[in-house]
Amino acid sequence: MTIEAIQKELIDEFSMFDDWVQRYEYMIELGNSLPLIDEAVKTDDKLIKGCQSKVWLHADFNKDTILFTADSDAIITKGIIAILLRVFSNQKPEDIIAADTKFIDEIGLKEHLSPTRANGLVSMIKQLKLYALAYQVQLNK
Image 1 (tube, rainbow, N blue to C red):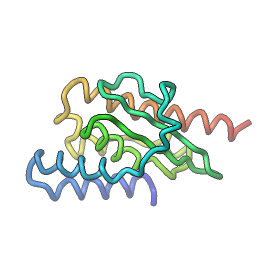
Image 2: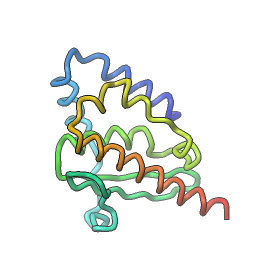
Image 3: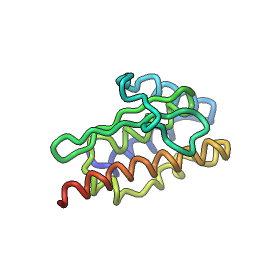
Image 4: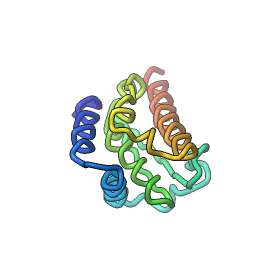
């Protein structure tokens, strides 16, 4: 499934909820459904800088796509990273790099986050794209 198709799917899912309490509950559900990350990769070098909560992000390159795994010590933040992994995991590096993230505005996520969580969201996206860039550089060698 393409990044755009997954983003559209998320927009449709979030539009089913009447208010942000329900949307937060859904985000928490998504966070709880994240596969457990290997404890061995929950190291300081995997922490995303700029997040108020601890967020670990790990990437594995598999043939031509990147598989991301992540965890957080906060339930809302875990939901946010779950949304991002759903969009960007199992995608090609060039598609991740080129992808826009306007779906975040379309579901209203950024405007319903505290400023520190919104900064963390930006940091998460930046780190996902940095991993993609690093793998893209390796592919082009």
